[in-house]
Length: 287
Image (cartoon, one colour):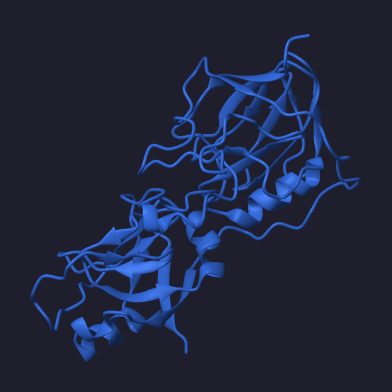
């Protein structure tokens, strides 16, 4: 019998395989990677009866289209989008059955940026350092999808959820990021730290899985020398020479030479993954 697989018919703007990543390898220069909106990944996996860390598809803005070789239960969450299976509309945010050979069409995001497509049994490309996640920075894991790619499907382990739908948070109309100052906040003036907390920032279209870039007032440096490269953590708010903060996301580098003025609370980063360009950003200092 042929092993079950998933044929990529339309890859979309950027579709990658993601699980919950490969934490614990920063000392080797390997980023964490994994789903940018981990809560959405966990929920689509629960809906189809998988373990929460099973690998799924993460789409970006324009969706994708795939064809499974066997009947499979699918759930799509994260950014809301239209769905069709075999040409018929099917529910978003709930488990649906897709027949063998039927085309599953994941449409463009109506709100938000990234949708997650979970399949019963999960996607099972060969893991690298314990994860099947695509890492755009290091190149580890499966390459971003292209039309004609074939991904292996795992065997279903659990039962799909018995419900009509599940509660999903709406993509943010304002992105509120709670931050703790440091480790290099003293490289910026007191006025710059006030600007970070009160200045009108917006999400830039130049962001990606490595970092969310912002548009808004530049942060003034108090120290103008060069900083030796030092370790970078998930959620670090790094300030490059143009003075506009960049929030590091899952594929961020493990070291960097620009000063980090603050670090975003990790639980706020899922919303950052769904903030469309132009979304207002508010940095809220906490202790």
